[in-house]
Length: 292
Picture 1 (cartoon, rainbow, N blue to C red):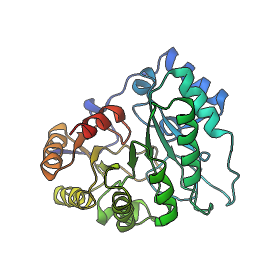
Picture 2: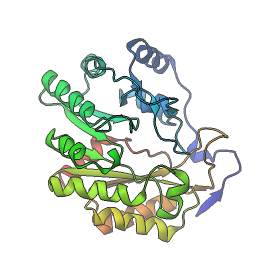
Picture 3: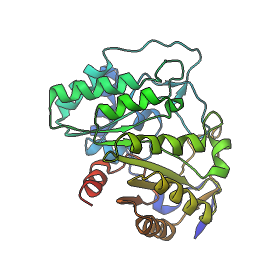
């Protein structure tokens, strides 16, 4: 149920070309000095999501202090980069302009900051709730080196969803994310649930990196062992020749199988498909999990 990668995308992964509305949206983001993981990480769903006003905002700049081999986000050339204190206001200003009621916030990893940037996530939440108390917030966080006070601050801010992506199976994890730890990521998700058992949590797995079926299922079990509520699975696409290569293109039938297995393991919501990304259809998944 897989197709060996040969540099040509299978038909089921073809994407639509950007139209004028999408190009204008990208221009407005540049003018507003607002980063999105959609553009900075070269998400293949950028065009379709932008048409729906579905954005994943990227805070704390667009330069990461880690060097994950799959990620197109820029790498920090020096430590101690300044924090843009006006960033939350600019983001929520655009949220108001677009009339968004469900907002996804992620960040680069900032190991140079004492709390890893957790306080900036909190500031975005506070700014959003000051603007509209009914707004729903989903966070996609780095591991913050597992610092308890950083996780405590995020849980106390009470976003609707806190996500942290495992990304791949344990065997591949160290090669794909050399400055990260599979076990720490599992522990972060576990700590969040212990701090607030009612907090909805989420994680994501990329497929096509050379993982075996049993390894994917074992990763799902590890995530459920940390009481993760929402799981997404999607096809990895390499951003360029200098990044980790695609080993295989996974066919849709296998994604369907993984969805069924995930639901049988007890996830409250599972989205599994070639074009799925961790923040894809985020609001729908939250509603499914919240009502499960």
